[in-house]
Image 1 (spheres, helix red, strand yellow):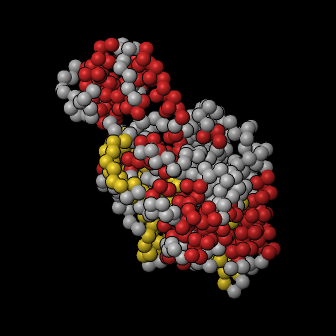
Image 2 (cartoon, rainbow over the protein chains, first blue to last red):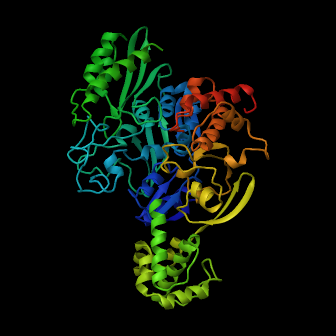
Image 3 (cartoon, rainbow over the protein chains, first blue to last red):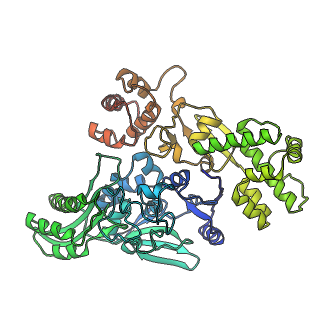
Length: 326
Length: 255
């Protein structure tokens, strides 16, 4: 690892002022992804700004709206009583990610900022437009078993790796950020972006902005929810395909539905059309099968990942059935 | 991190060729820092005394080195960012950049006051600086769990933890578990149930297993397997590891 300067931010203002002054600086919280990337020399910041001393608040329930401070650890959020009771989908998704050691270290804000696990991105000897703009994409005609079937571009077919983010996208969460121009709120579904011609940009956060908290609006997704993660081994592996489902069922009919996919796109892939279809329909196998069929409309494989176009609808109908049966 | 060792060896060769005094490898990064800082100050015609950074006793050696070695060698040793900073005449920034950081940390009950490079991981600090080699380096990328230790009571991966960010932390490693010659119940259970073959992953498995019980994640064999999934055992002693954790959990000695 290249050496760097480490500074500890004592206030939110000084953290933002420090990063605004220094283009080679980056924030560090849990560090579970950043330190790995630095060891591999994928990223080589000259200065790290340690934000762990900042006060972003704990997990609170404000009239049904849940607010989670950006520095809350993944394991802490997954086990928090209020999350398990009111937003169990988030708890399930968090527990499906990484290992307990990593969940003890990783923060909510850091989880959102983690980079793709595309092997071409991780190997500085390989071409990768995300790591080195205009160097090409090794995955498109290479090893692309883990890659995107939705929203890919000519320059990048990588996928977003988080589980937590898939649940937060489904739950209409809001990202609270602070920066030199002041605070702003970003809808979770607009936080991560598709690669387009700028694959080096994973999200819409400005370089000088800092995630301070996540808000989850009040909802009725306490019971009929499920996070189904399909992967190469039972635990501690990234998703081939994952499905976050939240259903509000009243007397056998679906009042509201939320559906998002992981492992298939450069961002959490929300299925708005399928949600609209499910609204008002009976929670039956036929409904779920039709929803599953709709879920892969517009999907495109690159050879190695063609199997995801078959796997995704099967995972969607399975996740819907499990959620409905709870 | 392998590259770093390679880099240090190259530096030793360069110094031998240039006739510089020979230092212990462990001192090299510090030494290089001193030289680079000194050189930059020299180029910037800044005659302030060098008392703002560590050192003192090796000042003469450093001056000798500067006399004997060509500028090129010293420049080869300085990271490019230092040279860039020198161009911009940001002397303080350069000095800061090269500085090691003070660290107060408690390991297995013993307080340590140390100077560490920002890039030193907790794993390297334990193994290379403090000679606590019980904690193992497996993948060094957070994928195998061999480096698992407890920091402030929570199991973490020491390979992905920067030591300098653990100010005043309380760290427990495998060396800190036994009470003299009396083994920890988890160590006893691993022996009783043959929870290992080659033993390389074992310190990480034991640290993780203890935390697994304390967290309340050892309610069933399935739950133990799930919450131990961050610890890979290439020999495949998984069933025996679960047996050992289950017995300690049932024994109720940890809670």
